[in-house]
Image (cartoon, rainbow, N blue to C red; front, side, top):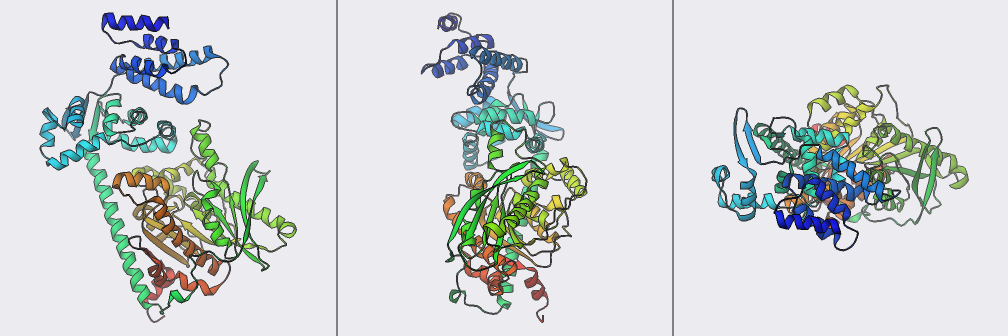
Length: 602
């Protein structure tokens, strides 16, 4: 502790801030124990402001990555820390002092101190006051709250995503709006500022982001207005589409023969068939690919047993199907749900641990369908010996969730349209369609045509898939398709991703179901609830959506896989109206209903 005493004496006697060398020696001289964190905070507080920003970067990286690494000894750990410090010190350590607002050649600048004072006290001065005078008192209060509001963002998770190709492309789009003072793309500054601000004790805030931006910031108001206009158009189009679909659903239902669904069995409820669940381990020697699959087997003497396979979303585990798989199997289906090793939950965990550069492998667009094909091959091989030759592996349905929807479409015959994809990736914004960033990863693949169609797949149920740019017109998809989406989706938006893709689908038997107010997944629910302040519990929304999905997927697979025409009534618009729960309404149209609506005499 002798060096710490020396530093303390210098601070007391000379009243000056520490430089990086003094800080580094002081921190590493401090032994482990309950006093290390208070001393650490003291050292940062007494470091020069611009240097403190660099020191926080060092500590964040060290604490998240090096602290838990089993290095040979403390000297090696100290050496790594010293190298990291020297590298960061070599970089410019200035921080933002002004925010420049520019519109073409016109512009104004706001000192950051004015924003800090306004956020803390509500009092404005100088340039900021002249700008805020254009807003009402209530609006100024909202702006003050907006500056201070903090969001829980894991800095390491953000930093890992920000260095993926998808993350960099997204931040580069933001960097066209938030630039350096020299009008250069600000994506690197954005990346570092968000990471540092997210590591603040209270979480990420706009003010914290501004304070930690490494240079003076320039905001291009022309691009801001264009983005706002684009988002406003998308929201308006989404509202219009949903209203039109609701009207079409009601009009079609009025033309359908009347059915009292209360007198029929309820497909939302579990069936009477018991089942067993087992895990099967698979190894594809040809691809040197090992993965597991959950297999749900109905305990029934009936044969053949119809088979459904499930394909998960990005970073998801097999437990994503823990609700829908038991529901289907309770009605007599066998269900198989494989992992996809290059894009499943374990891969994502390894990615966040720093073991992968990307959060999924681009080759997954090829390997995921091959996983399904290998799974079917293996079930077919085991069928005589393990399943009494009762599994119908020649007439299979597939349930594709998000990324799994793309997998299902590949198996249904869709092929990657590289020309369309390249055009969209160069001209369209990932900011308004996050799924486009992931679709663009397919451009890393060889341009050799790959046909992944599997004739064993007879019907596909897709939940919020992404495919518009990836597959283009999908002219080769001919099997029945059920396309379920939601209006509340920031990952695969209804107006710019889902409706154009469904419209391009050439299949003659296709269904479109749209739910209102139900998010894509838990992650989008968390993000949107912070923005909209919606307090509806996730579990409530989850079970409403699950009810819709249980009923519609069961009816679809019964009709097109199990060949049970009795369930066709549940695929009518009238049924969607019957089970819809306000305000989370459900619309349902099909190629049949639209044809009949345009030609009442058929």
